[in-house]
Length: 516
Ligand code: FAD
Ligand code: DLZ
Ligand code: SF4
Image (tube, rainbow, N blue to C red; front, side):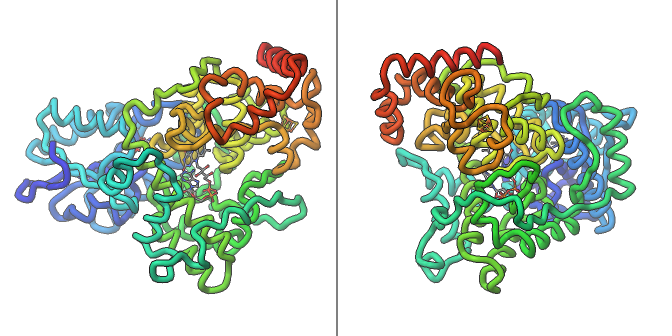
């Protein structure tokens, strides 16, 4: 096994391309030679089943893989494509490599590094055991290299995204005027906290009618994965780069200008608001993150979108997205096992059924079931917040998020879940837990108006469960959290309550948790 330096004089390479490497500018394709090398792509049970993926996610990945294989063939590549239902499919990527290598034993294997630790380890171990010459190329679709992130993180007590983000602004030149940030500020988040109104015009994402290839995949998923979570149809995702580019244009033309103002808002029956719904395309490789940012930046300079929206959007991609990837590779393999708060409750069944009388949770889980999508605040402040307040085992929460979203791959999902939403890493990624009572959800959404609970009630059977769970969470974890300066105010409020009042909160939470 070797990193970075492909063997030049080999008789040819097998170029393994994974389901999230569907990019024409993939390093292994650039390094390879269509006259000499052959591409291998394989739909395999191991990847389809390592968590019980949402049906729409499976259909998206397989349909996008099949379209990409066809595009490679049109561009002169020889492609071996293994379908999930091929009778001789061996079920895993290493064993599919074995099959191809049995026909071409002198070939080396060339690939762009897998994005997940699990698969990287499986493939490098396989190559070592089988004494195969495997070359892994660094994934240039990310803006920060592994070395750059490690260098940035070295010696820092706190790894705060904001400072890393500024480095990425400087590196890419996005929204920069020389050495200074456009508009004189790095971050315009303070302007981005407005609740949305139901009568606003919200365009929804770009929708694509499934073609024959996608229809075949939909039939396969319906047949093989009927027990998996999620609604398969209507299926409207783009599955080619050309359509993903149309989805990008659609977002920039119709929603970007309002993205900043309303990015934290939630509205009953409006799953997408002004979000881009592009993460699944970026993560699978159909869109390049930098090209997305340049397109969005252009909208600002053309006068089509305000700076708070454009800066906010670009920060999500060159800031958060790059930063969580850096944390993942810095802290794996132990990161997904973190459980700083020793939370051990089973994930409630309603995360899979959506059957709960909490209107905010029912909305977030219901749209997750229907669309394999929820936006950031729903993931963080509704389903994530609830799981943390209720003390759910963070590993189970992690596996749920990894399964249910079309954009979920462990490198991006795990830091967001384990770190940001569950505080299970003890504060590596966030300086305090994102814990909130019903008041936050009421401020940012209209869910409470139709909920069977009363968000204004603090305790008792009709009270919003988030209210008592919030105080129960702080009380339960006081030894670990009380010293956090950012929690000084809530702990002081809790300390000023009478013993009876505190007990009412704890009893209310206990009664609710017993029913879970
Ligand atoms: P928009 O709101 O339009 O944002 C624009 C883009 O910025 C996204 O497409 C995405 O590429 C990027 N982005 C925004 N926030 C983040 C972030 N925190 N981390 C990384 N990239 C970000 N994102 C994933 O791509 N995959 C996941 O599995 C995933 N799991 C998450 C789990 C939790 C608990 C939380 C709180 C966040 C998670 N996110 C994940 C981040 C974010 O919620 C999604 O990227 C976003 O909701 C995708 O929808 P969108 O494309 O409409 O994003
Ligand atoms: C997510 C996914 C799924 C469901 N299926 C496949 C597959 O059959 N073949 C494949 O090459 N890739 C698949 N993927 C994407 C991989 O899981 C992804 O490449 C790794 O998790 C690394 O990020
Ligand atoms: Fe959610 Fe509480 Fe509001 Fe109901 S009252 S929607 S449970 S925050």
